[in-house]
Length: 392
Ligand SMILES: [Zn+2]
Image (cartoon, rainbow, N blue to C red):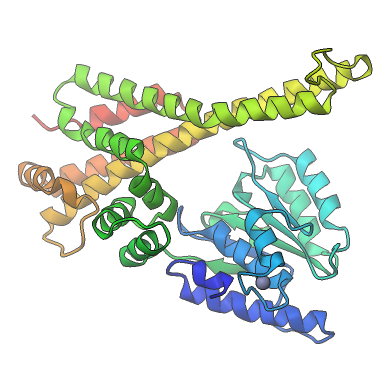
């Protein structure tokens, strides 16, 4: 068992990365190491495990056995504490030039443990234009031991100049059976539940895990999937949109509240407001207030992003629902994502046309685009539910 065995349904990518890690070891031993390069771009649909693949590769570069999965170094990578691994996880909607410049400076240092210095940049597509240009320069002239691992949904999400300087690793949507197998073997999920969650999540591993392990997540999915049949009139469409946005807000609040509080406590500690209750040290008051304001801005941006992500998950569930309807209408023999709603899907397939279904899928996709373009969520979702309304 090595680190690459943990990647679900990604044999091709694992093969590429194994070879590159071997080439990396060759370089460290003084050889040429063809097949290793300094900039990598991991792309693949949400939930395919981009970050996991990049992390496995980082472990393989640090580990003397190229990713054994059980030595100290592999373990440090897994928990994110390896001194030569920097993980960048943009918390807000974008990642700016100031942060990027600091990151590039840190990345340029020699590796502490003498092998590689690795920057794993999650959601690199959130880098602003200025940040991307700075990044490009860093990638063009890399220090000999620095390796950049950029992750993004699709190659098109990155500037072409960055993309063309990276070696690309393309992850695929893992098959349902592979996801179900992972849930059953690693999370001890009963087979029937594993199968259900894997199907419902359509190859999105994290989502499948959440559906399998968290009853609240299943309830939320149920609520989303009951939207189509609730849309009997205009008022119902407005209500359904309101409910969807409100649920997303609540879920986002729950996710961010825990993080926010621990971050503020941490910051207060740094700026000298200890448990003694003496308040902020005078000399630090100014800096502390500024940093707190900074933190609050970042937290606000993260809350917006989380809310948007939650709505997007709901929209993707709806797309999967109508795709099932379309499959039935066309008599396609594919596995349905929502087998648990077979009757409802059959009914809708009979009472509407494929054109209706396509129009509805379009409406959902348009809503996703509008949300990504910062349109007010309530307005965007309402326009969508009105378009989803049954004809007649
Ligand atoms: Zn190892």
